[in-house]
Image 1 (cartoon, rainbow, N blue to C red):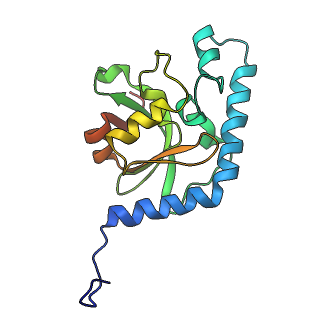
Image 2 (image 1 turned 45 degrees about the vertical axis):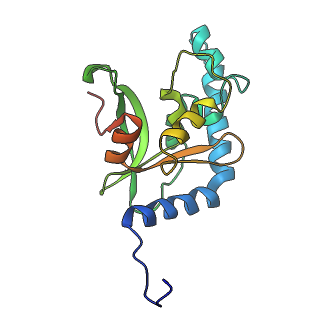
Length: 174
């Protein structure tokens, strides 16, 4: 309430982000566990390039900086009103045909949830673990929230994510 006793307007976007934050906090241990399972499964596959194998090491990146978006397929139920989408992400410097296949959650209003947003920040550089997430937070602190154990979540309207971070979340791969 404001000082005059009137209720203050809270934008729908803020309500949605608060709901996502509460969902992440309630499920944080499971989410981190599932991300770690996905990381270990990828490492156990024999067909990884040296670069990909290195990018999956905790000494190189935090969990949310690794290519672990398929974690959504490990029996993670998104918050009410969201569905898991296997689509793609295009960065500002990519041609549309070069969009990267990516799994994320989205609701009908266009709000997205992504557990692995750091993978799109200077992917071939040797930034220290956590730096990719820090760079995203610097650009759009209202869209990126860090939690314990290497978990960070990108959430917000897809239009704001595209405008502020240059990441276009697409509903289809091509």
